[in-house]
Length: 556
Image 1 (cartoon, helix red, strand yellow):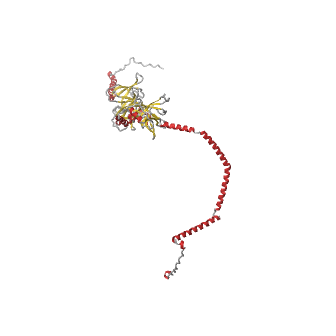
Image 2 (spheres, helix red, strand yellow):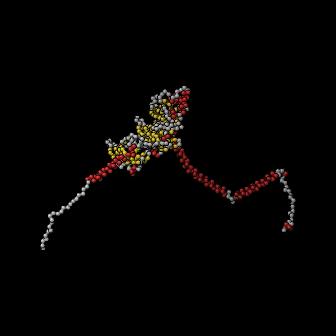
Image 3 (cartoon, one colour):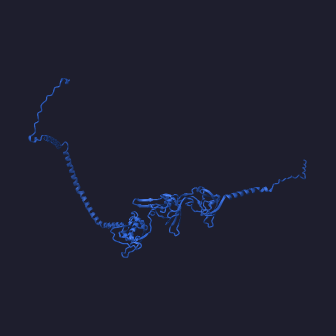
């Protein structure tokens, strides 16, 4: 095996020639520069298209999302929420909103913002669409041109938006009752508006409400319109039975306000914007005549007045002219009794024309025409105060001012304030006294002695009945048996085949023949009355007429 010699490698190899293509360095920055230019253009375009940035303060940001939640006006998007942060007081949230350029006019002082969520209120259910789309911020623009950047959002949607046709009015009441923002306003049981706001008066004496009545129904609100709280049920018990009244089901649950023109047919003018009215507690109170100047009277009763309460009506001949304001107990040292002092307020103007005639008549006679002197003269004519029962079911009492006879002469002092009017016992108390007298008379009846006497009588009756059962009943049974045998004998005698029955039949036949003979005699005497003297005439002999023989032809 021979060794192979390795091939020789040349000591120097040729080097490759590398050629580089030359590229300009400015082309490397072309793409980033173009992207920057596009970004600047887009930023400028977005800046030019975007409107002002405003901040809105809300109590809660529930349902709001940064970069997604829209701002809408009449269901049209006019902006979007950019950022949400907590306020420095930690009680509110600050929402930054960017409005569209076309919505720049919404950044004014009278614009209102609120969050639309599903809500159930007196006016119904709202915000149902947000269950699927989510909450959004709603806006209501006003007429102001003064710009503003910071706003305080509303906790609830406004009852009336800007541009709504109608008028607002102010109502004053002693308390709010069951009313709330959004409560309906009714005219003749038709909804014509709603309550927009309420607040406590500065002096704390009552509540002031604002209502909005839509057009054209606002023309029914005049300077003589009466408003009342139509909340709940109006229950009245009268001669026609129990009556239940309500404006609608909504007023029973959430309350409501109703209004109507004052009775009497007086001329009235349309009420001006923001006119003030008083809100009465119910319709009956609202429809009463105007009260006018109040006068106070005092009534002293010597009887118990259980059932009389503060607020009970005071009637004058059936017309309610006032109400009871206080009831207190007094002590009379002379009689050592405890009379009841009832203070009441009355309004003479509620008497209408009768009060005007009394005043004019007093002036004609040169007498004082004020209320105390007029009442004093009426007391001299028999005017008295009396507590009467207003309802037998509830036992409630009221004060009646009426003219009574046989009450004696009493006078009132018109210079004493309050004016004291004489009183008499009520008719119901008289009935109670009569019932008490009847009960007392019934108690005097000796029921025990009568009971013992009845007991002895019942014993005697028992002895008598035993005697009848022991001796009289057997005798009566024997008597009845004898009577039965007598009836059987009579029945046998009167049988059809008995001789007595046959003799009776023959006797009746003879009587019939005798009656027929007497009838014939009467007929004969009526024709021949002289027969009683001369006797009966002999019957005439009639000639005998021979019968004719039949001829042969006739025979044939």
